[in-house]
Length: 221
Ligand code: GTP
Ligand code: MG
Image 1 (tube, rainbow, N blue to C red):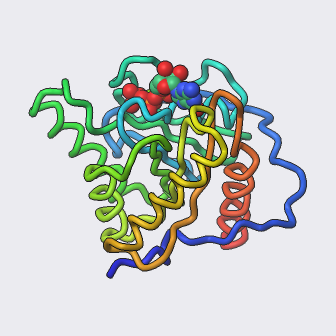
Image 2 (cartoon, helix red, strand yellow):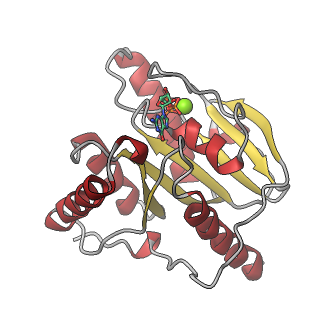
């Protein structure tokens, strides 16, 4: 059985004011973990299927409309993109997986630099795995979660596009998804968030969570 221990951090409910985003700057794009910034800052990466809403979520969290490039067509983000926030942490936008029109060769290249990024990026303190809240659990996401767990990479789940469903359906779909995980290889429910980049649902919760991990990171230093 795989456990969530690495990814589990309790959210501090006493936080009352949401973290202010004073600055959010694009720093660089590249296709190799070796070329990523060498600053020792805590880093959060967004991963998930193409078109799930990774880049839109970065814009929503930072309240910057066009910081990360988005598109209605899958396959928009192609590289590892670093955004420096408040001068002391990074958000990282990654290409999506599961895009059917990508050639086998491109898939392999993608796999190599993304897996390298996750395995070798010491500054990565948490991966956010994005799941479209409208869909049932899909093999490719479950496999990726499994792989993160096996490699001890801390992660949490972000359900996206919640504006597309009514509250009852949101609740039902999240429950079904988590039940599915519990019936599979996982023995605990992961930390998870329900978000919408259209109506900003979940923004405060995700930022609180990041802030809590940042505090831990800087206390340890
Ligand atoms: P790739 O870079 O191709 O992997 O995609 P991505 O995961 O970065 O998705 P992106 O943010 O580019 O969004 C894909 C599409 O979904 C765009 O048309 C967005 O406007 C739309 N979208 C993203 N988030 C939301 C959301 O919360 N609600 C709604 N209704 N649409 C969303
Ligand atoms: Mg993108």
